[in-house]
Image 1 (cartoon, rainbow, N blue to C red):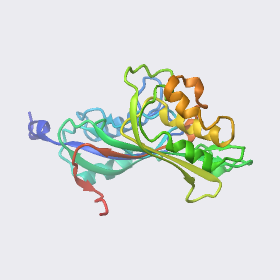
Image 2 (image 1 turned 120 degrees about the vertical axis):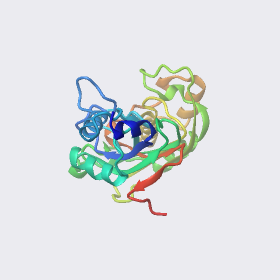
Image 3 (image 1 turned 135 degrees about the horizontal axis):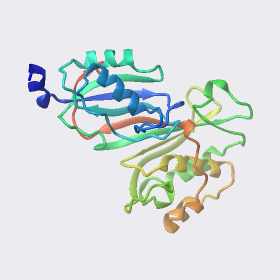
Image 4 (image 1 turned 90 degrees about the vertical axis):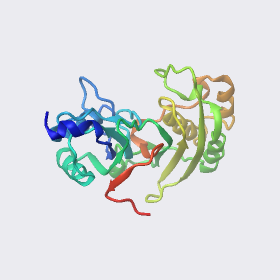
Length: 269
């Protein structure tokens, strides 16, 4: 047994803040017959440290979903600096995936233990396609009533039973969730876009995409303003709007439930 083996059990976990363009991937979670974000990360990490653990993630995004800051953790057996992990992994990852920051956390830390998550959904309201938004926004042809969408969004804030706001594959018994902010606003960089921002403590499968689809259907007049409170009572998926496509969904930020340290690059105050 060498010195590295002796040191391995005491090394802290490495937490990576990962950004990616989800097009061309079969989602985050590793699969036997699909190219995934987790699979690419595992391969890159183990090319540096062959005995490192597989990555553990704060969320399991679907195929086509993007991320700006998706924390993942793994347990290394090599004592490399966070700067070395960041630079070495970015040399080995495909262009669609980037490690934005590496930091340390207590050994075996699981990023699923988070305080809150923030998602952003981008809607392109345009009659003609825009190649710069292809695969990165949901294009709708109708004019959207932003005021009606924002009024409806406010009904989602707070603690509710979101059983109607989940995909068919979600079989969890406990479906009460708490959203702390839901906002519909004009896009900052493009006047033809609307952004739906959803912040909450936990989410059900496809919950944000169902929220986005429902708000858009309210905005284009396909659903009435009472759709959301009705669904809270009925718990029936058919009372809501469509499930928005994956293209426009971004995991923006995850606030972890543990203090991390030794960040590289250092975060601005």
